[in-house]
Figure 1: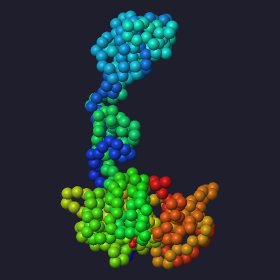
Figure 2: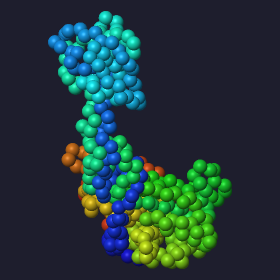
Figure 3: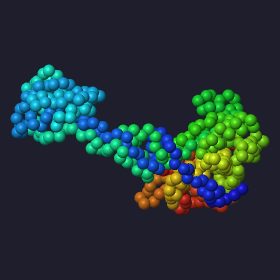
Figure 4: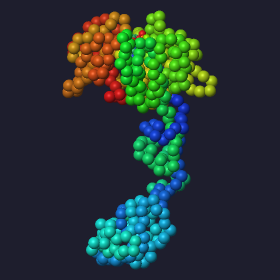
Length: 416
Ligand code: AMP
Ligand code: MG
């Protein structure tokens, strides 16, 4: 059994940023690019109408407020292509997004049609008055946003939704970006049934699976849910082997000292090297951590979390969260849950031998943060945690912390 600080230090020493990966555009949103995006086309790709109206030649428009009558030579809709030219005295009815003929200088909006001619189409005549007319108006000229061959996004740029749109416009279906950490989640225990079924006698729903998947997703990583493995060596072994293909395997259950706690032996059998097992911590003492190193690929970090849901979540926040952030290349200040000093509003007792993390509710009272411990029956109890917005972190010591005392709290700014 090791101290919490030593265990966290071992996780930090073991996790290293993953190399960037080529990935689908939509999968890379929110992460920095590792290479540029180069446009394969101009934007706009052709001279394009920006309004519904009539494509005209500026030469037909003289003084402001003069009414100009033109013959409508053809209709152009978005998606049409044309090589036709607009001759003097003529125009083309044009819709937003349609290509503007080369010889046209401007689009006069349909709102400028007078004398009931706004509905004029090919073969008809339109009367236009545009007091604000200027050559070039309402035409998006080819290549004015970006040019083919131009670097439109650069290494280091964070792929925002707008940047995804820009890259998609420029023909980039894939980008090279900081890796999205793939986290396999495996729940173990012969008593578990999927949470969408009603458990038989003696069985319970797998609540850790959805909970840990949600915690992984809240960090921007990719949860890969492997479901449930019963406490049988062969089933466990094949499920663990499947999880070892991910960047991180987060398993819950089967790491304590019971007869059917087969997980540590299974990890060893799969070639995972133990870094630590059992930490001076409440809840979460049985937690296991190791690493699988292979010649040709990045290591897989392996966490065996205790099966009790509150233990699982506390261990996730203390050990798995920083590992995922480190693999993703996040700056150090993001690795761990933020900490703050808070004033205790009710008495709470620490265990004699281990630091404890208890659910609490945080409120601001002027400049002071107040922490109210929530009722909590122990490691299996998610009720308190589900309504908490912080964790009260008390050192070992077996003493009563009185109301008004300053204590340390952790709060989750990613997950809620
Ligand atoms: P274990 O760590 O396997 O000894 O399990 C400790 C306790 O957590 C037992 O009461 C299990 O039934 C329970 N438990 C284990 N896995 C889960 C899970 N995925 N969801 C909910 N409870 C679990
Ligand atoms: Mg078990």
